[in-house]
Length: 318
Image (tube, rainbow, N blue to C red; front, side, top):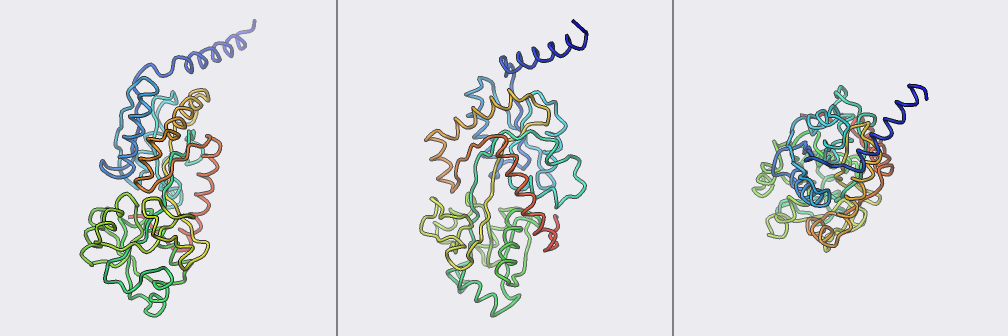
């Protein structure tokens, strides 16, 4: 047998052994945002469940910065052995356009595992805003161009980009006021310092249910189980509008396929459990759990959708 043939066989045997023995030590799950936010909390939830099924601890490591791209760089440059994973949000696809000089390739430097969950944003308003539906809001904005304002947790954030999509499709002029994070934004909304916002369901539903803010619409194709009485943007004044936030799991490119398949199978099993579905639904999110190939296609589609809007609207990150 030729040396080259021996090498190929040895590599195949090593890959097979890795898949059969994997994992033999704790895994690192990078959360590319600060502790306490939706991505961090979901990473800890999924990490705990995945650790139970794999028989090894899954340790969450926060690497915030540049809209999630700092953590993504760490994951992209990690060893492709299945022991470093990253849980990303919608910003992962958006950053490819927002940050033209990323130190990694969004499509080539990662191995998608699965799309974990998706959730609509919710359009909220201070109780003083004289509009209770999307139709009324658009009419108000067109009657007084530039008089209304909306806030976000920062320029280039998901809610900022969704708001710009709304402005583009509705042909309205609403002034953007960026804040340094979701906490300051919510405080400004409740105080009436800012009038409108598209925000994360997890952060804003409590404010709506307490009566501090009013929900005008949700941005998904269908109504949310967390706010079933609130219509979608599409059904209440702007047909065809849809924008959802997502969370997905990635590994470094080159991670063995059998390891990816194992991780995918375990994640799908977790997401299909009634307990996880109920927990996500209480936060207004839907469990997904698709194939690595389907998730790769979804990332590419999101990049195309948002890159066009970002360029057209001249959106820049903080």
